[in-house]
Image 1 (cartoon, rainbow, N blue to C red):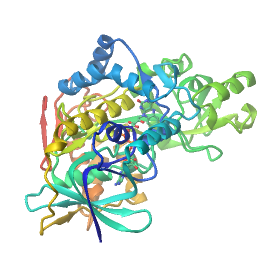
Image 2 (image 1 turned 180 degrees about the vertical axis):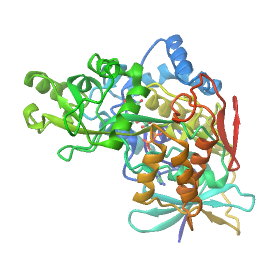
Image 3 (image 1 turned 90 degrees about the horizontal axis):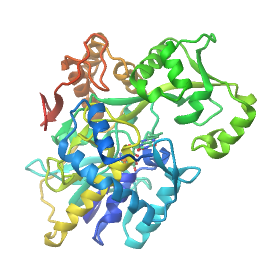
Length: 476
Ligand SMILES: Cc1cc2nc3c(=O)[nH]c(=O)nc-3n(C[C@H](O)[C@H](O)[C@H](O)COP(=O)(O)OP(=O)(O)OC[C@H]3O[C@@H](n4cnc5c(N)ncnc54)[C@H](O)[C@@H]3O)c2cc1C
């Protein structure tokens, strides 16, 4: 098997991984990615507010469980990151949240711009999938085993590793993001004993298009105000306050309740959004709105009603990092949705891309300070290949039913024993079992975590996985 040594290995080619690569001052960078990423599907709507308001909102929404060091780094850097983007040539327009790149499919266009910049830096880009972590006798991660898409298997050893492999979306049947941001790396890190936090906090979204005529993507924004929501019999199912909030575009304020209503209905019947708008409005929307391109081949009357389904949207928890973006293993850094801490127990929209860019750059700046002192990579004789990846459709279905927006003790217990009794559990299944265990151990509903049988609280401890053990505590 071919062996490659590289000074810096980046896993993930989304906003976090690409921005790390762009800011690293090394001529020996290797980036490995699968084909898809959430950063490409995302419209890159960036929340822009005064620092004071933003901090207040992040803290309030996150139930005051935010890691204050990470919040500090975020607030010091978010304006500069927007300037960085402008300097790369990205054009912005105003959006409902702040700014959005002015392209029909922003994620795709921004990736092109980033990749052009990376060509100048001669970053080695590999297409494939990390399958295993390589561990030395002290249980430190020293390399990875990769299956390239040309069927070749290789091993890569590094001085520094940047984990930018995205969130847990691929664990679920219904997800707004790419199946390639599938929690595989997080699951391997769990097996390797890296410190992880708050995995039970997940953000869901009610509006995934599951209509066979349309691509399976998320819709948001103005279109939601132009629909009436009904079950397959044509009956309305939303409470009045949620229906009103949607009509007046104020649904962000009632997001958790709204998501629950859609989720509970989806367990009983299909859900449709009936379009209530003029032909003129629809034509304008197709041309001007960031979601308009999805409907470009349709007239309003061809669609009439659109089938929707709630879906997993964002992993709030993830790897623990410090203010230097360092994980619990010193030479391993992490950035973006694979990390946890910045959002505490819930998050506001429009911050995820900024977070990925800020901490992606941070990893680069920290590694830049150290790379001159590095010694040659020596591969030890004794190496263990850790992890076995894989997640069946059956598990993804069950994960959706049990860990969706509304959870209950009975179903969690059933899933736990199902996974416990599974022979040869994969790395993702082992992590899933742990998440379920955390959900069962929590004794309150808080933030983005909701269990029907628990009372709601305003503050609560965070959950940590330290050497695979669950620990609840305040702070870090
Ligand atoms: C539909 C949608 C709309 C969104 N809208 C917004 C928005 O408007 N504003 C906002 O701020 N946020 C938004 N978000 C959230 C935001 O897109 C993500 O949080 C962000 O893109 C995460 O970036 P990332 O670099 O951490 O991960 P990703 O972009 O998910 O990248 C992960 C990378 O890791 C690679 N990878 C994963 N596993 C492996 C493996 N085993 N081997 C090799 N490579 C691997 C993937 O191929 C990919 O390249 C949206 C998300 C979705 C899904």
